[in-house]
Length: 351
Image 1: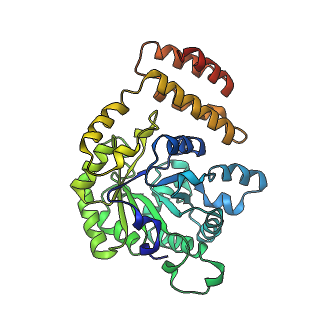
Image 2: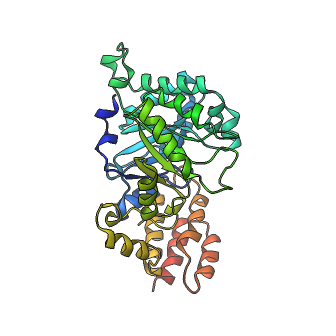
Image 3: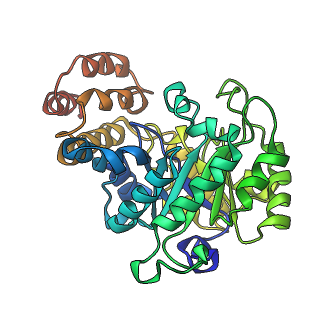
């Protein structure tokens, strides 16, 4: 499908996306965020295309929970990873059949276990393979009645990539053109190298160079910046300063499902930006506790049959902070062993 025909081109400029974060942006948390103030684009947690293509029934059940979504999250993009084109093709077909609005390929994750299979950021070392993987995803989303067509960009759902500026050093001038050559609908660039991890500030000074490459090589591809974005006001400023089309926010969502609230996303309402930016850091204890309770309930409803309750505990510190006795409540929550136990404990503090 050509970028001109996808949901991507219907987004405002700049637009704001929620980053895919493993064991964080699962179906429960995304559902909560959609209720509190949705981003312009949601992404699923990254999911193994190999698993989707090869896993037995029980393994498929757990994997597909990563791909559970609701209509209120649209547009939503499924993020996949694989170093095997044939498996990516199968997985892309599965994802397209599930009704996702797009597929994103992870070429930036620095996790060593992922890299061991030439996936994630390791893909930067294998540019020819990276192009094969993108083409395989495009083949996978073909409509069956058009499977013989040679123009991969005119059918199916849009393909995007999330990556970094290089592996051990700045490789923008070689790596980014490799990806742009595949006529992606969108390209998200985390503005650090793989080796920098998150140990140094994201270098947004690189973004104008990336935008210039896009303008020259693939004008229809949207460029999304990522790294160290504090809030929507900061995202707007970074987009204005660098010329990118959109900004992806990640860690800023912890404990703050209101991050993408509507008034922060409407252009021109500068006073509301300031008021909302201040308000989001001054949510009352009751609001934070209420949001955590709702999050726990959604986790119980959507995830608890396949996902360990311990996953929820990484959210406790983010929600329960900023007031007297918050530390005591957090410590007690960390000792809980079940969702209802945590909810009952929160009820005793919600006064």
